[in-house]
Image 1 (cartoon, rainbow, N blue to C red):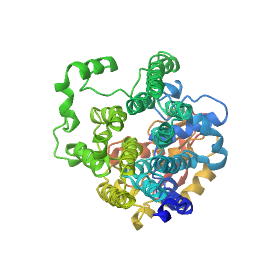
Image 2: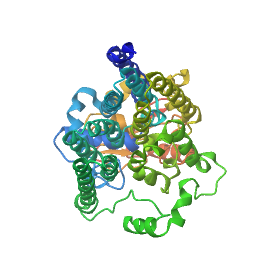
Image 3: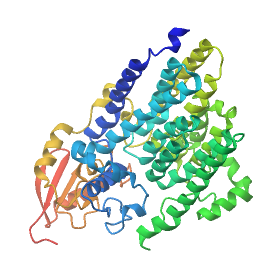
Image 4: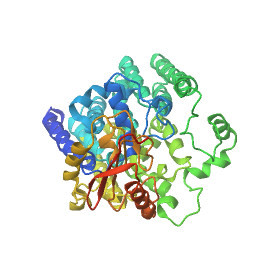
Amino acid sequence: MKFFQRNHTLYLCILTTIVYAVIYSSISLWNHYVFRTFAYDLGIKNQALWDYAHFRMNYNTVLHELNGEINILANHFEPVIMLFSPLYYLFGSYTLLVVQIFFILLGGWGIRRLVIHQSGNEWLALTGMLVFYSMWGVFAALSFDFHTNVVAASVVSWFLAFSFERRWVHSLLILLFIILCKENMALWAVFLAAGMAIYYWNEKKYRWIYTGLSLASLGVFVLIMKVIIPYYAEGKLLYIHFKYAALGATMEESIITLLTSPGKWIPLIWKSPIESSDPFIRDSKIWLHTAVALSGGVFMLIRPYFLVMLIPIYAQKLFSDDPIRWGIFSHYSIEFVPIITAAAFTLISSFKSWKVQLLSAGLLLISVADVTKDLMDRWNPNPYKNLNVQFYTQAHYTREINYRAYHKILAYYIPKHAAVSANSFLVPHLAFRKKIYQFPVIKDAEYVVVCDDFRNYYPFGLDQRVFFLSTRDSLESSPQFNTIFKDQRMVILKRKENEP
């Protein structure tokens, strides 16, 4: 028993972190290198990062709703990107992907700290890290660009660790960081603090501290939604991310529906409102509930304060109009990872026998790994399907285009500050400029870069390659442009002198 209680695991934890850093990089950084990242969302974030790195606010030209005229904070309130902007000078277009990986790895150490505090068993804490790092929500998020909610979710483990240690000031600072990540994270902060208030219900001091943090977070959320985002929108744009038609047209209507009409929303917890034979639409919610249960979510029934913490996460997923949000794909499930890991290991830590603790944790790790492997096999989002996530296959490391050459070609032909229009998977690499548009938007672009990889034609439909190519060909034959580079896949056009 002494062997399991003494510090024999620190170096193993460091080694584990390094191994997962390599795995995560082989997904996220490699996808970017071979042009499998997108204008929506990495291209949008990269242009904002570039402006912030030069001490400017960003009026995004990639996101067509902003049209280069509206501050990007009117789209999502994500000032945390400002904090990361100096790293642009080190990592270039990979910056936010590196940041995302770093915070996920940091989240595993938060779980380690929490488990050590709860059990004193550092081997159990190592297993907790492995469960956190191996969970499907992490791999799904890494396969699709960068998102600030991934950063926020990763530090939740530290919020929980500090909260259980009664370090409420540290908890406050973590909550503040979470709120700065994205506007919906401020709403999540309300329930994170409320969950801890329930945990400390019999301890008056901490019950009121975390109740206060919950109410303060609610006030900040309302301030962001009703004052800050409208301020940056300047009356030119309504909030475009509230899409919950099943509940109501506005947030206020949705709250009324939730409180007064449970018959409208309770079936949405497991049922798709869309009749479809496509399992991606028909079964997504069942996949989510199954994945959560098999990954330790059942333990939340015994630790219900953790379930309270996930109320807004379940709501924003299951009641959404968008089917991709319902299931376990992309970045829409990352928030489950720290909560269900913490719920499982706080319960396992309460077992008196260290053998039972390690056996339970080992079985949970196997279950999580199985669910994650199922995710990787079942991964279906277009256009690259499971190629984006299956880091263990040769196909993941291949590409339909000559990516090595194209990095050099883009650097050679496209001036750093020229206005550019490019198709989706090229935009993140060309976003560090004042004007970057997603093809077929041209506007005043001085250069147009179009590459056909036989997969990604966004924003054209998947079956609209012919329209994608005809739009490209019409530009190539236009008297306004000269063709300065062309091969079987890529065309680079330059606007002629004196052309509008």
